[in-house]
Image (tube, rainbow over all chains, first blue to last red; front, side, top):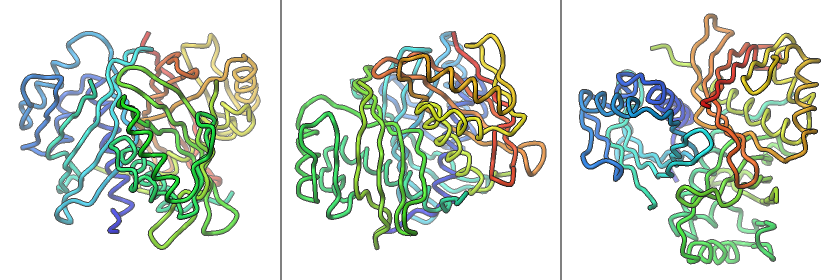
Length: 130
Length: 130
Length: 130
């Protein structure tokens, strides 16, 4: 079994931490910057994917403008080897929580790419249980 | 205070990530393989423990067959030194969540053993608050 | 972008794991010891901050005596560079959960200091959404 390097697993945890705090605080550009410049976000909660830095920034800005303070609670991260040494896959659980109410639970399926600035999401596919 | 090595802590996080995604996706053999061949699973939610690769695989298969899509959300992991350099203890919180409903919250108390394939659960004891 | 060292990120994850399991198990002195001797805990859930080892120990003891078994579920940790090489900042989500009921969701904003015994919380500010 090929093992993902310790520092790469930790970098993915850090990326996910940064990502959630950015979108939940309304820092849309910072959230978009955790994706590659051609990064993709696909989710059954939204009719269209968000693609590229511009599309991702607009998506995050709209999310935060919607009013209610929501929190992207990420847990249960599993990082897997990608197809190249500069690619990883990751699975995680994402709970969107409003104060004391669990709004939805989703499963993240990410493809990550190593860039000069560290690991970035190349393609995120969100799966919803219901 | 003796500190658990960075790479061992991360390996336990990876083990738990892999474990949850395996059982929740119905990959019973993969879940069982995160335990040692003589691994034990004890939980007050079930009348009998599941023991050994065969017993663990059957347990995970039954869990998934029960129908409702549940998610094993693991968080708040604390890895502690074991009694030998090839043993660790870990405490974690496990929330079993169905879409937007928290089904139960439990505390994991694990004994892990270093094997040729990496860290594996030797004995898991689940504690339930109610 | 300056990156926090892998071992420091993991040490913070370990600190948070230890912290939650300590307070939830009634080990008040162990919880207080995860703060510096002059550590501060500020939370809108309580009228006064808890300050210093004595104050923090008393706070944790009162929390546990309150009766209901609560769990401090920490997730979505993001560790950031501090103002010196021996200081870090961390953001995290903290859900306080009672069995199957989410009691409250808060955001942790911590300042951590490197001590001879490892990283410790110098100042914790808890933010509540509602």
